[in-house]
Image (cartoon, rainbow, N blue to C red; front, top):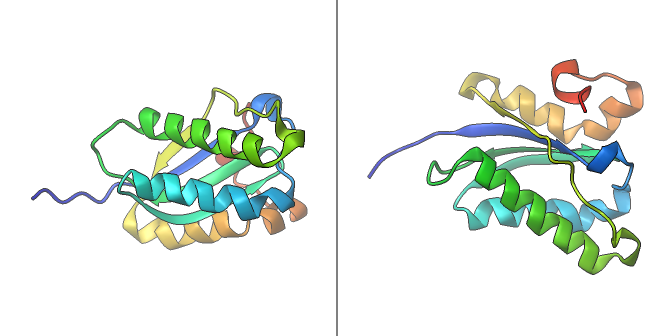
Length: 134
């Protein structure tokens, strides 16, 4: 049986970077994203975000492309938000995304970064390559 260790840091914004993602939605959104990763036989390692984007660190199987994984994450999570919150009836994710491979020796640092999104954004302590794009 083949062995793979494909860890990714995935980042994607809301459509037009609109500040849709109030913290009250995290209790639904983060578990939904984790379940989607698990349904693809992957392992979610960290999920965090801010009002206009989400970060996911996960192990993914190479049975489909990263674009296919991200498409599934976006479509299923947007559907869950719309079904559960009437005010999000027009919600959608932007078409863009970032996907970065994560080396084993850097994984803990990336997980910490994702887990502390709200604190980092509040203090404007961002990693520009991952945060300041449209």
